[in-house]
Amino acid sequence: MKFFLVALGLLACVMAWQHLRYLDARRSFVQDQQALLHSTSNFHVITYLEVAENTEIIPEVGRLAKAIENDGSGKLIYAGQAAFTVDSARLGPAQWDATILVEYPSRDAYEKAAQTSAYRDALAPFARSYSHGMKRNPLVNLALPQALLAVRLVDIAKGNFSATPLEPLARPADAPVEYDMLLERVATLRGLAAVNADAIVIFNLMKPGDSSQQAANSDYGSKMMSRMAALAHGPVHIGKAVALDGDVDFNDVVIVYYPGPEYFADLMQSSFFLGIVGDKQLGDTLVVPTVPILSQL
Image 1 (cartoon, helix red, strand yellow):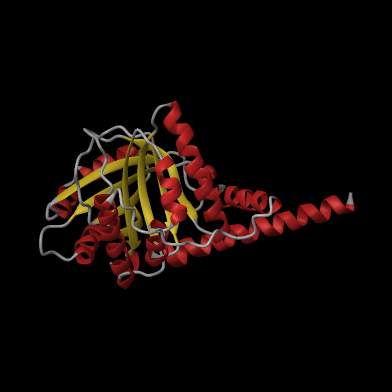
Image 2 (cartoon, rainbow, N blue to C red; image 1 turned 120 degrees about the horizontal axis):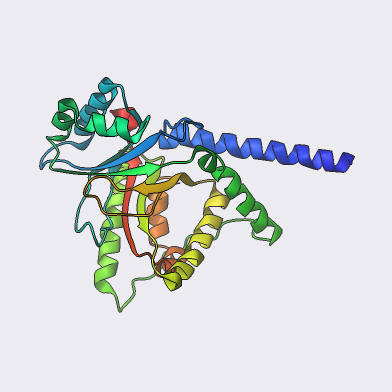
């Protein structure tokens, strides 16, 4: 009995440590202002923004953030400058420059705010915008660090004590166009280190594929989760996607933190990543990597 109580106490200490280190990363590096617990009626909205030509991104996003704060109905959770866009097949080509994540007390509160002249005026200077809703369960999200801890403990039990080093993959001879696109994206990522070197936060709107695609995707997901657990990063928001008026219907939202643009650039060029990303198969997805800019608004 005494051994059991000691083991239980040790586990509680490890879980508390895991919670605190992920919380510190969210606040210090991701600049994420999400309360750990909130009402289940709360409604989150991701807005993708394209700035007008010859316009600076951070001042424009800051102006929009101020309008949201002045309205008082929404709380700005995250703001990021985008690196590049992996297009959704159904939404079509886009090159988003920034994203913001805003929490409202309800969907009705968002829709009322979105109809105000102040909100429409704040969005008007942007060349384009697109918003998608998310229903976020606070308890599920609170458990994310503990789920990663469980993955880590299982890996350690299997003898996997550290993450695989990232080795760059040589340029393939049979895919020059795709590799050139990869290099362009990697260069853009590295350039964003001047804006924020601490974090990359990737916004994913996802629609699952058929059963065979989902099975293939699960292998990618398990290997990435293992690496995230070993290096103390990973999902910060997951939820059900909610289509707004006229929006394409996605199923899930997953917002993931990685430790900096340099790390993610190295990851994208690595034999590890390129060896598993081909197994990632979804019915449709919109992917936008960003660096945090909330502290600069």
